[in-house]
Image 1 (spheres, rainbow, N blue to C red):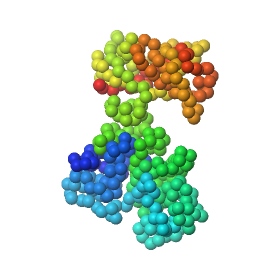
Image 2 (cartoon, one colour; image 1 turned 120 degrees about the horizontal axis):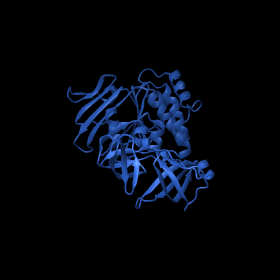
Image 3 (cartoon, rainbow, N blue to C red; image 1 turned 90 degrees about the vertical axis):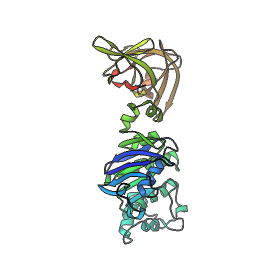
Image 4 (tube, rainbow, N blue to C red; image 1 turned 180 degrees about the horizontal axis):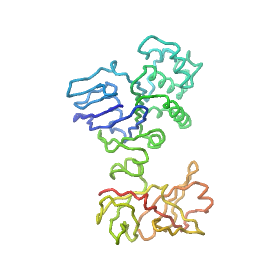
Length: 356
């Protein structure tokens, strides 16, 4: 397991803590300048924080209390850079062999080329490869060190979307055979949600939350995290008790809640994922007790890759637009169009509360 705890009051400031299990892919996400790449440099030994520790499988790479700071050559790290950082005067095979810590093993090079789907290209030079192929060489070279940790710094940002999707699939397949922590830095939330087991949100060099992609995207701890992960439905309301039930007063609407996390009689922020906003069929509207029916008028429809996003101006709630995601098939089947009046449900179990 990789354990990271970094503190630095100098620029770039750091206050970062997270753990990454062996075989786990952890994504560091946050805006540009948040400190994500600096964290990778600290792990690799290329940047020294003021204090903290970095441990891999209980072995200390850095510990300010014990004055331990292993140099990069003493840390078995595979590092894949955004710009690939291949040596232009070396062939594919030579780039990979250069990273091997022991004897230059032709069998290992051949095996790695096979793993990254580059068999037959070992004698080519970087300028003779596509961007995607160069990235595969960079990954193979990183693995040639037999690393304890694999670090990926925006590894897909320099390739086109079609190539990027292919590389996602290849990395997802490759990582099944990698019994090591993998730390991915990305500003692309969709990329992180697709690839990562765990996400860590960093802002201004500080860890704000660590959890599964579902947890961070649908149940952020704070409004700050919600905004950083681009939560699309973010509102204010007041939690009140009605007999044995708890309700969320949302302007002139009352929504049923399941669990209030101690927010009784408090004004709160709340969110619901667009995928958890459920469209009522026109001919058979739902009347479930906890389904919180809400009506409104469609003000915009957008379809991308089979998902239709509906922007709904909610009745009885002033100046509020709520977003709902449905499959394109559902949108067509229900003949949804701008100006239609529809009813949706805000599922009680999907309403997530946050403190003000």
